[in-house]
Length: 282
Length: 334
Image (cartoon, rainbow over all chains, first blue to last red):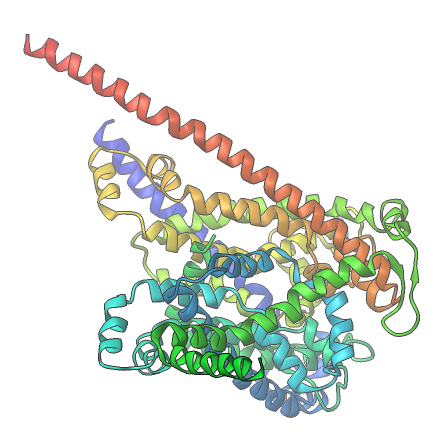
């Protein structure tokens, strides 16, 4: 290989590299940015100009209308309640289960791990047919608590994140606490839970985004759309008669994804590491 | 007699008290206390429904009201109805899409694992679609693909004329490709982040060594990166194929299954919740689960076989190479 060849390749690769990065970023952003663009247009402007043309002035009235029409105030309150309960509940359940599975040897330990692992293989949509019947029999349909309880139970990835984290906390810590006379609950609550903080943040961010974005079960089990919309299902308002008023719809869509965007900007690291950790479990 | 029994009871009670205070007893208590809720939830929302689903599949029933035993009739229907099993063909589109997505993700992950200007910004832009909720994605792409709107405009910038462009969501020859495209759009960034995580965990000195040896980027990728993240790539291939069989979201939120875009689960959802034929829907779910298990097992066996051969071979090869090297050195020494 001559020097010139090396130089040539040295220039070509960075160019290809940056072109591909710019191209794929463009692909990822265009649908969202065009939506943002349209959300600022008045109805008249939306009808008469090309969608990619910039709006003449930035006008937030679509946001106000969309927020009111889709009952989004109520939706944000509901989603907030659901998020708070599901996150607290699933964190307590998940850390406790992981603690027991990681720290104690007992018959059935492996069986239980496998039961949770096997559950991931069952596609959620298929299971909703019988789950709907069970929810119906339990009287859980059209109640926030029913939906919350259901959402708490189906979380395997965070359990795996916790178990992995426990594996890196030395058992000698527990043992010395036992010598000091601490009970197992004290060990879990006072020693291990604080150490688990990074894993808890990671799993909460992932679970939070997942819960916030969940719409299929919310639609199925919270059917009363005037009282029980979540942010995701409130967008259903725009199906039907409003179906072609995209300036309004786009405003609704942008409102609904703002919280996720804020969380993403604040917690990028936790999200990325959570996804990488979730991948290792297989 | 009676006094004896009482005595035994007392002794037992005493023992139980003592036992409950011992470490062993405390352990049992904490195990039960901490596991009862998660196991209950797992049972109620996963295994009980799983059992019920199998049971329902033998009945003709609705959610409420009387049910009649029909034996295997539902299963026969699944294979005979034109709308059920035929829908599985659409999975091929999703499989192709998933593989393309893996390739794009691997390519971008390789670029972003090394020093790149604005690397985090690019990564963030490409990852963000993953965080948008399904309904919003549906609206975004209904808008995106509308005649003369975003996608058509972008293509017109590139020199296409509107007359030659198809209706992306109506034209049956292209609409499934459009839908698969939205799925790739949504998940390639997530896959990429996953691969970046895997590539970062490879020992950095390997790359330096490769660079010193004069390997180009492609060679580095092929001989160092790919072998080290092999298991994650394989896992994702397996997941993407089973995922394609159960493809649901893109058609559900964008076209609602119209114009020949209804995948197997969209058909199942319609049968279960619109026509309320719970028995038939359950049979459909059971059939697909069966297929997914078989496919998963076959794939695992396949990859195991492929890799066992590779692993058997490589030590032998390296030994041979070492022998050659030794021989060469001896010759050189002589």
